[in-house]
Length: 223
Ligand code: DC
Image 1 (cartoon, rainbow, N blue to C red):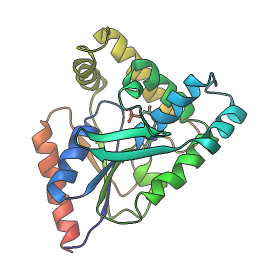
Image 2: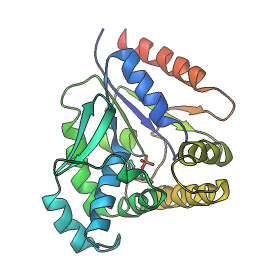
Image 3: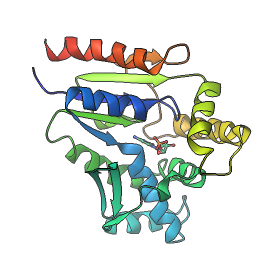
Image 4: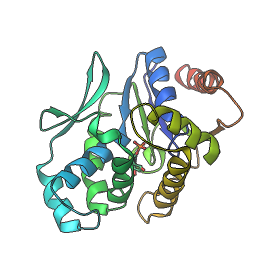
């Protein structure tokens, strides 16, 4: 069976991470969370006091950034200059900052090269916003996973509520704002690739989403 590149795009909270991890495991593929890279840039910009609209500052920052995604016993971790920042990037503030810096061409250009290097060897599942449209337009299998804003906000709330003081209302407001930022930006906006298989996860369980995707992938890799 041939190895391929699988892309999964879609808005925040649609279940991309859960689905991507499980697909990668079932296929024996690597899994790459590209949102973590945008969050890494946001975290370092914030730490250096650089605003999301300061293109010069972001450019200088990106030139010296050293972001690495590594697989450890705890799963996929994000290292910046050798420090593990995987937990620090998962706050609501970092979600909003990542969305803001991701609209800046200088940041997208920096991460484009880094992401493409990660696909030198096939057999990878990439999750993000523009994987199928911009970063890997030649990917053999593309999915666009969506769900209603209410379902996505509730899912994100359940993930955050134990560790962070958040309300469902706040999570939904942030998520809708991020949807708006990510889909309306000029460069690489969130949208399905023309050849993506679109899946609405609102009425179905994650197991069914994975089963549907596996059926599509199997027919691709046995072609
Ligand atoms: O997937 P996530 O929620 O961790 O992503 C955080 C932000 O990063 C998201 O709001 C938009 C941006 N992003 C992007 O622009 N392109 C990607 N491929 C992945 C994430």
